[in-house]
Image (cartoon, rainbow, N blue to C red; front, side):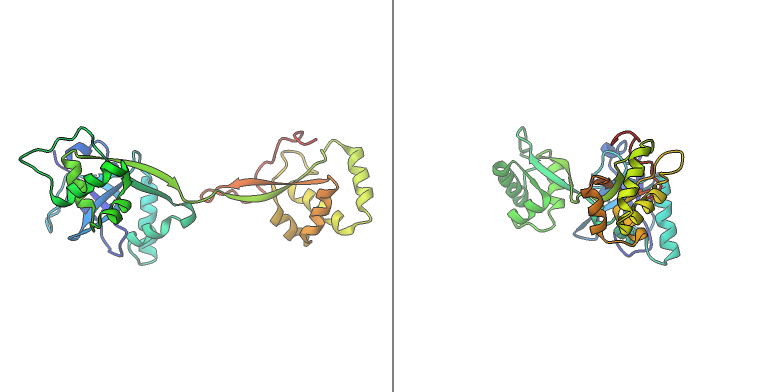
Length: 289
């Protein structure tokens, strides 16, 4: 039976658009999947599937989904509902929310790569068109290229329909390569290199710092924020938070680092699900003793 998909397009249009799912893609298209779809006469967009159904729209003739970009959905149903709520609350389209939803630093670019099928034999009754042959000639030399590279190399604009025709003829293969276009975000944290059970060392430390009020104030603030004097796990404290709460300069902290009292270390921070600094259990208590 024919199946259809309603999709979000990255456009300021207050509606979803319905596309036909080709038979060979029926088992691969899911809610939350990214797909390439034609729109208008010449343009193609990456869309996100929001629902699947069996009802063709009455007001226009459906076009086929061109390709699937993800083996697994990138969005779950609750996230799509959240996008809809945001669009309704801020009086914009879901397509605009879609465009703005992923921070640039988090985007993972998916570049479609095209490779020639070495076993392809041209059908005399369905011969290659001039633009199709041009693409195959380029791929015969370059082996595998992205759509953007092929478009630039061949001079053929709006290349996706040509690629689709070559795919239908099994003259080329399409593959997906994911590239990270961002570096993980890191943040500096501070830890004390004296253990809770090292009472003699702590007393000596306090005696030494009694002549440096700012270093002592920094140490006391760290102990307060990290729950050093309490039972239970120590809490992780960022360098930024410690300096702000203690109201001292980095030079004061560097002085304690130089004395072997404290250590600054880097930690990768999630840009999506970030637990507030000062609420995470820190390293095992005896790790640096």
